[in-house]
Image (tube, rainbow, N blue to C red; front, side, top):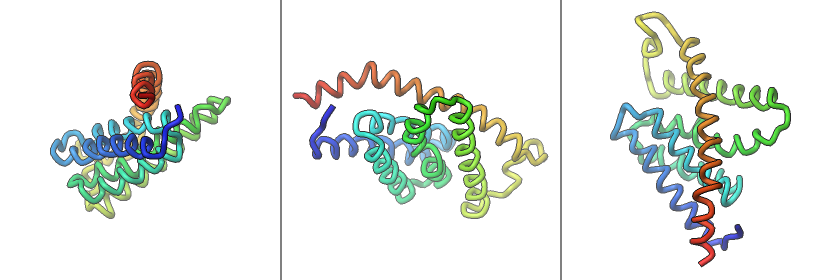
Length: 180
């Protein structure tokens, strides 16, 4: 679908506003520190599919900056900026790779690098005590990373499912709106 420049800006504006509301909303719902940035990232699937990777990356930058400026839950903003925000675009680049082993190795490498940066950010920039990453007083960073990898695989599948749903159900509606 070929959109005019103004339509692209409007579409991105709506996606950015919705995504920002989700990330900033984590400040209102502290138990949603992980879920709301993940949902905000999934919304950017529409930008990837309708407008391309360049516009999706631009949307990620805008939402990231707004969430850092407006959000009270800086951990949620960091989750969006350091992983969830760019992952739909990255997934669109990695999924076409024919070799599934290399595809998953790259995805897991990016996730684990982001997880380590998030961990270091939480401790050294946000001031979380290292004890907050323990289970029953036992340091559990590696266990949490392993669990995070399992959740990441589910998230990757969910993003793929959302992309499939969007293309088959919502894209025709969006295309009709912009054809008018």
